[in-house]
Image (cartoon, rainbow, N blue to C red; front, side, top):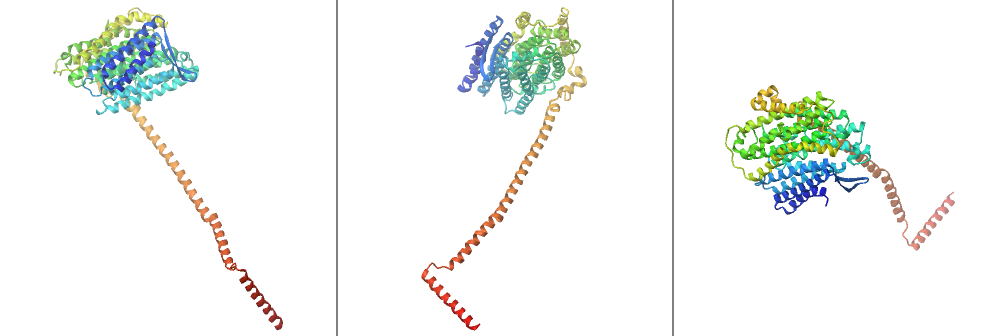
Length: 613
C-alpha cells in the first residue's frame, strides 16, 4: 500500500469504524490519526529524497483522478496529520463528559481525511470533491452542539458564506480546464494571459471565503460555537488554511496584476481583522479574528510573489494558533466562559497551561527564537523585495504591530489576579495535546532556516525574489512585534482604539460587515427572485386555466353542436322507422286482404266518378 493511501485512508477508515462499531471512539480516532501521521512522515521523507509518488485513479473521460506526493504536498500533508493528531489527543480529555463522542470523533476524522485529500490532490476534479467534503464536515462540526441557542445559525452562516465564495473556484476551474485541455493541476499552471487573470481573481474569491478575508471574515468569529478542538483544527490546518493553500499552489501562474490584488486584499484584511481582534472582549472570538489577520499576512506574501514565505507562516501559524485555541479551551473549562473579563486571572489558576499559551502568544507576535519570528521575517522580506514595496510593506508591519498588541492585552488580562477556577477533568490529555503543539511552535523556529534551504533546493525557487539589506527584515519585524506588545500591555484598549472601538465591536459594519455586504443584498435579491418566481408561477397557472376553459368550451360545442346534430338525426331516423314499421304487421295474408279491399274501394270510387261525369 502506498504512503499516499495510508495518509488518506487511515483517518477515513477510522471514521467508518467509529460509526459502525460505536464503541471506543477516542481510541479508534487516536489509532487512525497516528497511522495517518506515519504515512505522511514517510511520504515527506521520500519526497525530499526525490522519491515522488503518484496514484492515478479512473475518473471522467480523459480526466483521471490524481494523488501526488511532491515536497510541497507532502509537507502540507504532514502538517495536517501532526496538528490533527495533537488536537485529537487534546479532544480525548475535552470531550470526556460529552455523550456524543461517536459523532464528534467520526466527523473530526472525516474532516482530517478530506483535508489530506485536498492537499494531495493532483487534479482539479479530486480537489473540488475534497473541497466540498471539507465544507460539509466543517458545517457538521461547527453545529455539533446544535441544541444550544445560536449554534445552528452560526453553522449555517459559515456554510453559506463559504459556499457562495466557492462559486469562484468552480468557474476558475472551468476556465483552467477549458484553456489547458486537462484537469491536471500542474498542466493548468501553464495558463497565461486573460484566462490566467480571470482564473486568478476567481481563485482569490474562493480563498477569501475559506480563509475569511475581508469582507467575508464575519463568519469565522461566529464559528466559535463549535467545540474548542474543532476551532483549533479549523483555524490551523484545515478549512481556513484551504484558501491560502489554494493560492500558494496556483501562485506560479498568477500574473503580476492579480498578485497585487491578492496582496491588497490580504493587507486590508490584516488591518481590519487585527483591529477587531484588539477590540474583542471574548477570547475565542479574538483568536478567530486573529486567524483572519494572519492569513491576510500570508496573502501579502503571495501578492509579493513569494508564496514560500506564505507557506512558512502557514506552517508556523498552524502550530501556534492550535496551541492558543487549546489553551483557551482549558481556560473555558476552568471558568465556564470565554469572556475575557470573566477569565481575568485564570492564568494564575492554571500556570502550566498559561505558560504554554504565553509561549504560543509570543511566537504569534514574532519574538525570537520562536517560529513566528522567522515566518514573519520572511513575509516582511518578501514585501521589501516586492515591486510594490510601498503598498505591501506598511500592511505587513502594521499587521505585526497589531498582532503583538492584541496578544499582549490577552496575556495581561489572563494573568491579573482575580477570582478562582474550578477543577478541569481530563486535564492530562488536554495538557498533552497542548504541550505537543507548543513544543512544535517553539522548535519550528530552529527548523525554519534549514527548511527554507530545503524548500528552495527541491522546489527550485528562492524565498525572496530580490536581495534586501541584511538584517533589515529581522530588525523591522522585531521592532514591530515589541512595539505591539508594549502598546497592548501598558495602554488600555479604549485609549488605543479611541473612537473606532465601537466599530471594531461591530465588525466594521461598513468596511466588511457581513449583514451589510452579504445578508441584506442576498435577501433583497432573494425577495425579487421570489416575486419573479411567483409571477412565473401565476402565469403558468393562468395559461393552464385558459387552456382548461377553452377545452371545456370546445367540449360543450362538440356535445351540443356536432354531436347534438348527429344524435338528433339518428333519433329522427329511428322515430321515422318506428312509425313506418307500424304500417307493416309482417302477416302476408292480412296484407293481401287489405290490399284487395283497398283496390276494390278504389275501383268502386273510380266507377262512381265515371257515372257522375
